[in-house]
Length: 235
Image 1: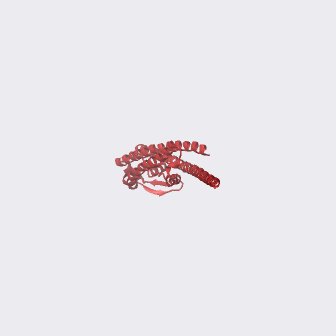
Image 2 (image 1 turned 30 degrees about the vertical axis):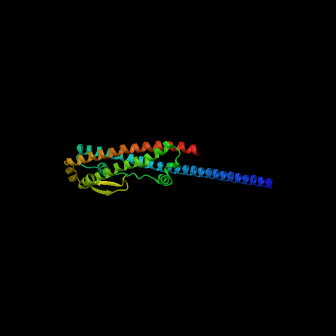
Image 3 (image 1 turned 90 degrees about the vertical axis):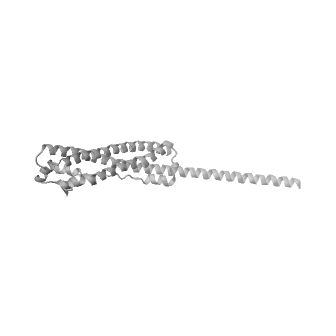
């Protein structure tokens, strides 16, 4: 009887050990599965953020080109008013560019997914920090610059331009707009010193935003490079 009892306890202990081992194996498999799922999710999010940034890069570069056109138009209009006695087609076109205010609308679906899943899913500390700074600080700071320019445009440049010019839609022009002014209106405009000041202020506001846009462009390029390296290591 004692021998049977000993065999029973050994059998029971063996069963318990097997159950524990089974549980540990199941937990390990579950951990591996979870890690694989997080790995795949991290890769998916990083790839989507990269796609978003490529779109953002194209848009910010287009905006930078537009702002370069605005600065050139400011110089041309001021020079024309000082040196010419009658308006021309080129003057109409340059004056119209002064009304242009490019607006950057970043693509944030990838970052939104990252935030919803938890930013800690990104394994690289430096990349996680760079992404957070880019979306939370750089983009929001750039938006403030754009909003300040829009306020200035609404309060100062738009009223002054409307005072002197008649805006006309023209699909043959780069920005689909032309500003018309009569000879009499041009003579009045040449004597309006306030208009010259507004043109200089447009150039200043535009240059400030352009400078900030170039910083955004630089950050996007750097972040895309970091994402490429991280995506390559995860694949």
